[in-house]
Length: 214
Image (cartoon, rainbow, N blue to C red; front, top):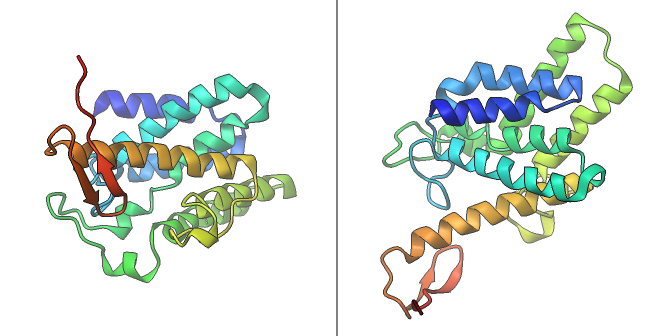
């Protein structure tokens, strides 16, 4: 886990927008004890000890490739901050019984998206109490919260977003999150399947395990 934390810390250091760097860095330092051991879900994906850290790092690695491909078209700082923080609320939303995680009462009240956006907003308030904060800085923090609020996709799909994605980075965050979640879900679902089988998997529909041609 030390290597995973070191790599995540390296991504934080690449956030060049100062206020996003400060918020992300402080929230990680304050919560890494639980973040690094927590599950990422009760059932759906990465529902194992340290699944949250593995999932987050996987997203950051995918994002790096996308940012390298598209250059200045994608804001790397906003993407890194959003992907690092998007699921941090799960340390409150879900229990720390990692063999059989459950939703906590706080998680049922709000859910991880609202919980982490509260964390971010409190950080913004604390920073404003220490120094003058420009309207541009406030705007980019609220843009960050929109990316996080919409990382389950548009409201119309009913997957739990609390806002529609309205920027390129918001759409990308949803797609990257979905890629890693689906790969984990399908990989996990097909482990005990026989080659050539088709089985209905909760949350995915019918899944086919291809036959090996080697």
